[in-house]
Length: 54
View 1: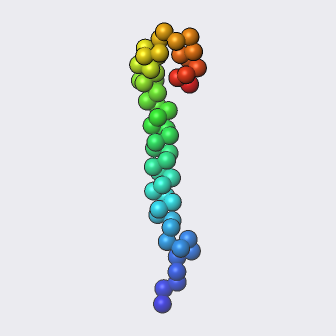
View 2: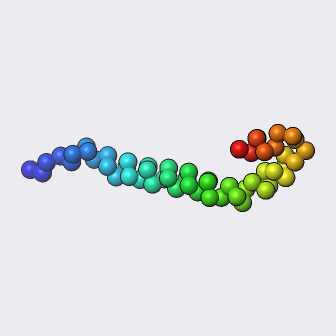
View 3: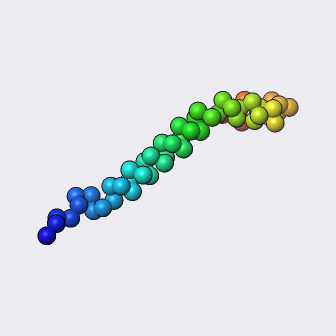
C-alpha cells in the first residue's frame, strides 16, 4: 500500500497557482512602461494624471 502524499495532493496546484500569480504580477510591472504613455496621453488634461496612473 502506498502512503498518502504529505501535502494531500495539493502541491502541484499550489505550484501552478504561484507560477501564475508571479507571472501576472511581474508581467504587469514590466509592461507598465509601455502602457504608461498611453494612459498619460488619455489623462493629459487632468492635473491629477500622474497620481491616477500610479
